[in-house]
Length: 78
Image (tube, rainbow, N blue to C red; front, top):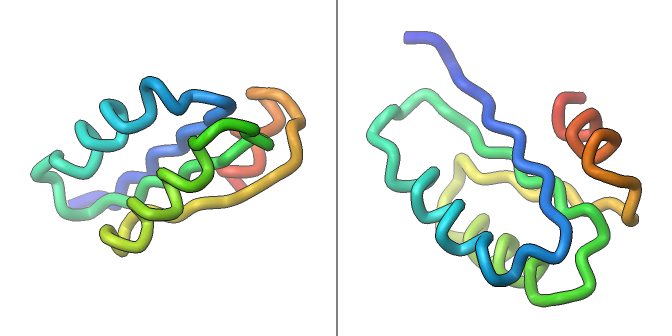
């Protein structure tokens, strides 16, 4: 089966990130990684995604200063 990488840039999405990540971690496809690029969030987004990453080994978090969605997506792709 092919390996799938999901890149999720996020910036100040404290209100929606829990729902989004819950759907991603509950997928039954086993050959995946979820790369969350925290784009300099100033709310509780960073803390929440770090806690989730501690529970799910296929979830990786990359912290960056606020560089915009396109640049954050490119960081995740690299």
